[in-house]
Image (tube, rainbow, N blue to C red; front, side, top):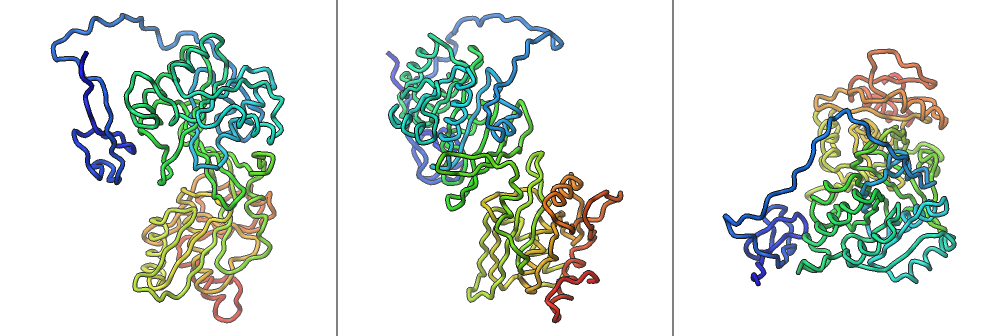
Length: 462
């Protein structure tokens, strides 16, 4: 019998090394290299036999299309592209306790009630624990088949007798193959277990939903190749102190990527939020200094959210920069433009920036709203009442146009806003609210400074 070969694998990036080290040379992570045993490769020159010859087919051939499975949760169906695709694999990641298992249990319960054969396999909880959660959510009578197992070989053997249409694996980090010597959760086990489950999905036509743990950096634990193997990758986001949860599609072979679904965590599980803009702005009563309402686009959905800024004197040699919900590098760029192009001195002050409601914003169209919040906090002048702000800032201080401006304006008008601070458009926009088109960032700063001379109100003249 061939002796097992020893190797050392980084559990964050999957890099293989010949010896152990405290720090991975590829991803620079500390204490992530673990020893794993694997079968040695065949000797050079040893023939492994000829492969099976397969047949090529034309690209324009006829293919039978199967209808998507709608879960009855409109926000989930929206993110997945109007339903689950048969013979596909979805990976759902998120922080511990964010609601991944609750969401998938609600989804399969809705499908099973509609007559779809669903299986829920838990590798972290006993069957009775899953039943208790289902009763708490009011789903105790749903005809979902439940099992507690971690062996992929046993799971596939059990599913092969009566292949279901939807299978939930909670979670992929607890699964293992007995022909591998490494422990569950290691790179080799996660990769091999996911490969077997995805092969089952493609051969049987079942939809496989995999729950994935995340690292402290927010990335799904295990090899990055796992996200390439599956058809759809969904991230469940949200702050533990907020009741809002954001389901975001970062990869989708059957629908739009970067689409979001908004949920609210309640004592009866996750409730859908049909109008997230109204929810994110529900606590906003009147304009105060240091705030601005940003009209953004998440996927195909317009979302209005409040951006809050605080500028305070610093007693430290290096002023503090704290950012929640936005890119800290983008904040540094906006502050540099305000300093170099507009003459504002923010370098010696502490700056705090927060996106209200626990939403994370990544699009550059939020630059102008962040700048408005910073200038408002510095001058003490509130932004104009009933106004939304959007626009990208260039390094020369110009305000650049953003995509889907009409959709942003339409959403703002629907929520009762009467004014928009936006980049100048080449064509005249047909909007139901007053447009204040800006060309340079210095124009925005002058209007705040004019209001800080004594009136403490926004100046339309600049």
